[in-house]
Length: 292
Picture 1 (cartoon, rainbow, N blue to C red):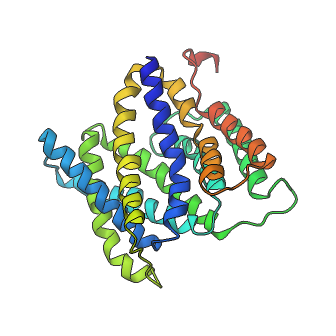
Picture 2: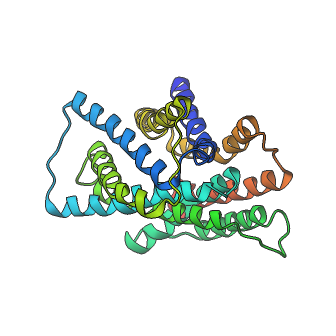
């Protein structure tokens, strides 16, 4: 079990670092091009994995349509808005906003899947939103200067929550690898024309280290880390694993300090505790639900 926690912690470090990786990459590649290139290499990785496992499944028209919608919203728009946002948004604040995805997912599940919405969820949501407002307002609760990049990060958070709900419904009929492979293929295909429509000017690095960084982070963040997480999550307590995943904003802070020389502020630390605490309060499940 200790080994499993070590691997899960590695995944959290990778995913938390992705905010800083993205911030670095958008300096050398324009957002739509970066999205398309990342999806291309992710698809290559997934195709190689599926070929190795001889894992290709036929889908009926209904599931294919649902996965296509998932590919557009949960893959292309999610990835594109992430990189557009990181052009101006602070990576730590972006990580804190995305940390609230489980809360929005809970509300969407209550709305569309008729799952139970508890008082704890509502209270935790209020605490987390207060924390976000505190961080975005830089400690002043009376004034708010919202970076336009953060609005795109909110779009990333919303599309991520939609992706979770759609994947949960689809996984009742289709295996996760098939969903991931086909949705990423759709996302990549849709992304290609937008490179020439949305990117003005089109920026592309000619330096080999930048391409190595792009390819490596794409495969490790969206391929290898996801596989490691899915493999080891079965050996640990789900609530403990969930708490681990909430450490991503703190990882983003530390990696921002190391790679971007961005100092960690007291406002970010206080806001982080509010946000992570609110998320944990919202998503924590007691074994005895009758006590709620």
